[in-house]
Image (cartoon, rainbow, N blue to C red; front, side, top):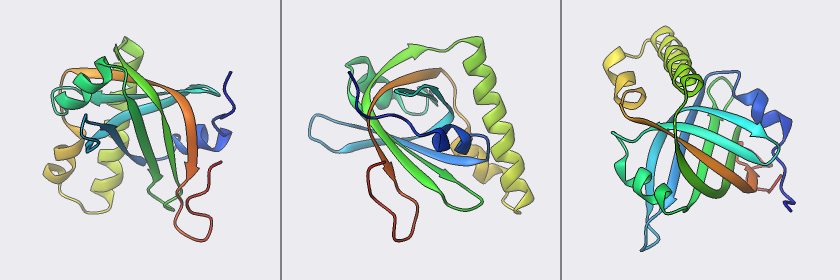
Length: 154
């Protein structure tokens, strides 16, 4: 039984443009870092992210072994941030996952183009092929929003 529950605020955060960074640990405890291309709170204890295995093959290999993963989500308009941690496994994507990634890419591209960022810069981190889904069994959630409340577990 879990004692960590995803707050509804995390699911609501995903309705806005967000940047998402994921990391897994290597055998020598160094992080392997990548960018997510979509995310969803499946239920109160399960979180999924979509990422490019083509761009981040080591993360795909680590997930195949059922490693721990951390995902940091930051809303771009106000920097509200959360970090979610847990055991994760990789799964093949569905049509809904591909649509989620396409929607995320469109939303982020529009956000940064409106801010004056050149498309080539944006494509460097929202591109990639061979999409996979990482499914996290959530064990820890932290509020990482800058300011005096940063860092505590939720």
